[in-house]
Image 1 (cartoon, rainbow, N blue to C red):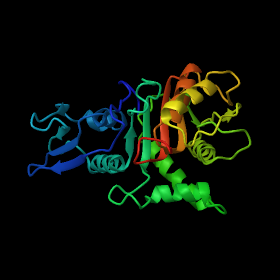
Image 2: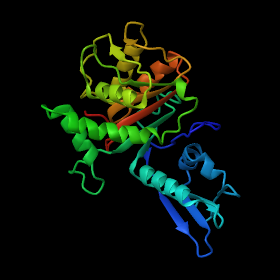
Image 3: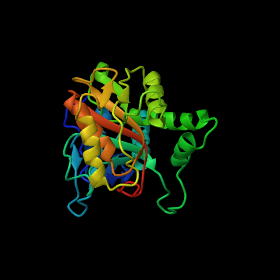
Image 4: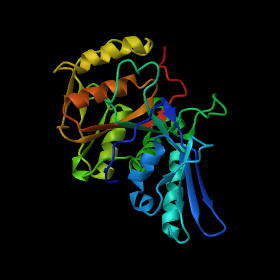
Length: 291
């Protein structure tokens, strides 16, 4: 995961990988990917495998939305083929997130990369929660014992962390979460604390020091200035650790419009963070918040 290239950028509000690994009769192998964003992620995650493709990325003029890597006979070991298939299976499930029509007028490069483990609803049956969103919902609102639901989410986040295009070196990484009032054990805080513990990474606690008006049912265009106002003052948020020159991985449970995540990323960059990467449990099918 050493970063020798530019951080991959998602030009759309959300995207999922189109992927296929095709073996030829002569023993050669082709890996086909969506042409935007994913080739750069592949290069960062699997640089040792990418280096074995003698011709680099190819593109069929008749398929502009697809790129491919060709590997000759015995070009990849069985273990490397398994690595590629595991990467493809993961990113076919994950959702890579970018700016949308609600947020594009307010931000540019504050959030360098953002990944959701899945959508919150089944894309074929909008009334049905995905497995991860059911765990999120129960962990957040179900009451009672939430250890098992937290475990499902934590394991998903931990697995996804390994596929993030995170710059090196590892000592420059820190985990944080969307700020919440001191003393409140919000879901994103629980998840971030446990993820940091499992990864043996420092945590940058984020305590919300200023009260904020209810934001749940107002339009994104009104919500963004409120968050920016809170984050722009010294007494708005207290960080429990320095993020200067660090890569900050921000944990949250739900990404809707992304307004809060992008505002917090803006704050972290103003605090000196080198990169800010979002890692969230689920992405809503809508790009708007509750309103």
